[in-house]
Length: 136
Image 1: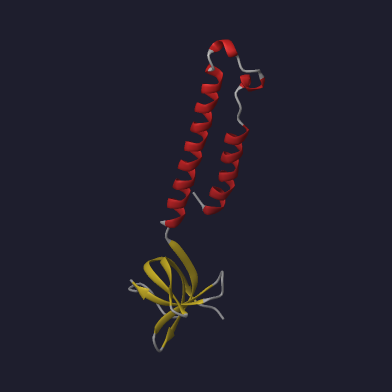
Image 2: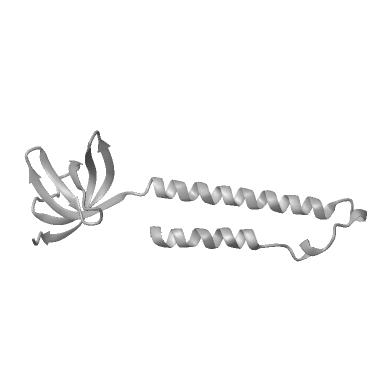
């Protein structure tokens, strides 16, 4: 599931749960029933809270552990290779598994972004896609 569709689905799920109401919610409580309606309402509220917390936890885990991707041209340098991301126009020093990385080529790299002091670093785990030589 892509991140865009995930962020579209979250408000739909939240609104669906928030707007769902039992048909008997508009009726007054029955005192003779010993508070059964009140107990049922409390149980429904607890269930909604538990489901909402579970959805938040699942979303956080999915977003946190999803590998990141950078697409851009790989440039050789004095301190090793770097890649300039096409989306944010930032230059990242490459580290990690750079076995399939070729300088002068446009690649999609899979891995993690890291901040090493003032410089940005991308720890590559694999080459996602090779688009061929960079064009100026």
